[in-house]
Length: 381
Ligand SMILES: Cc1ncc(COP(=O)(O)O)c(C=O)c1O
Image 1 (tube, helix red, strand yellow):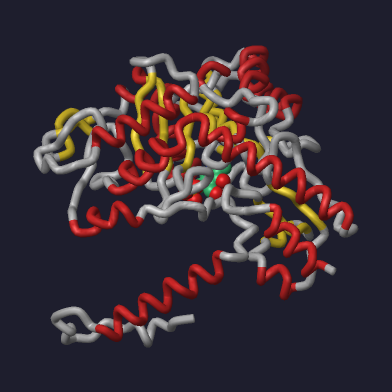
Image 2 (spheres, rainbow, N blue to C red):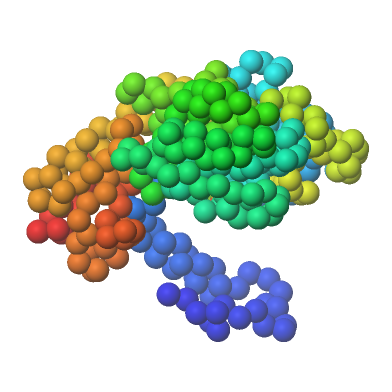
């Protein structure tokens, strides 16, 4: 592990290429690659290679402002961003022209944007989310000064609809901004978007905005066996899906989509060096649109569906192998996460497994193979 002291930047720079520094970085990359060989515990896909895009490491592009307009800076990758947004808008069942979106710098920023848009529609809203929602949710509630009500989950890890009905009933004079989690970070559980809509309508609250936080589980919901309701056609007003999870990317990113009419409420005309601004960030990452476009052009919908199929098959395999190993695996419906009795600390560390609530978490992302699972099981015995 490198220390900050080793990496200290001197007062007088080397003024050119420093062989020692290049060697240090090479060794660092090698150590990262080695550690990634046994990465089974986190919801990031490591199966990608974008080195063909290396040219873009010597170019500054900036997607500041709305993805639909070029700024005065003028050097951006917005057409690629729009292509990526269009792919996800279609996947999410958005009616063309009625849904707009952009690439945010990750799932947290995407959730912030969605909650911001929802709060603009219903300024007095209370934010409801499952008790298993991502930790960005309470953070965002605090940032936007929204009262936050965590809703109890059922055995399947999803937001309990009876619990939601009870909470809504206690605040029936206030609009509801519900963040539905599609693929909870802990268990991959998927909230029931149509059920949330139904319960909110029955509660008679004055307004309902549903954001589908599908950072982790969007592709799994869309291509699962069977597919799960998760997006616009199922009652969501906004949707986010991360780029570094099922697709895979060296940097985090997230596509966030919302109804065009809602996006219009946060638009600042001409605010971003000549472009309208309907995003959270100022300068925006123009590399991620290129990465995701490149990956998606290769994969297409079919390739993404195959990836999901692979993840689910390897998850089935892991459940069988961990059962045989006496580790009591459990998995909620449609999920690629398996919880099991935690092994020794050494094994946990080697395979980068998280221990939460006394369970080890195996997260089957596209880079995880049956062979990885077999090697893990060999280590368990
Ligand atoms: C369901 C869900 N939402 C939001 C996030 C936040 O994403 P990020 O870490 O990219 O900000 C995550 C990340 O793990 C997540 O799993």
